[in-house]
Length: 79
Image 1 (tube, rainbow, N blue to C red):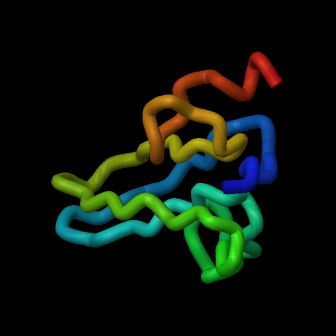
Image 2: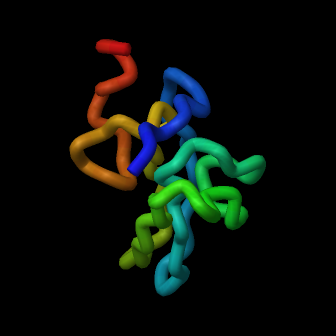
């Protein structure tokens, strides 16, 4: 499996909607950051599927090195 590409060294704030499924890009190659557009093909990586339980703003990882996927844990500060 290859290393993820750092899409950006900051989280992506996203207004999520209760009941909606989100497919977080784990490879960093997607042009639809922070979400998957299928660019991971042949990378050995797959998106992380997450479902919102309530409407709110959440911060999705942009560096792709978080230990708490799909959310930012501050890992970008160490890159």
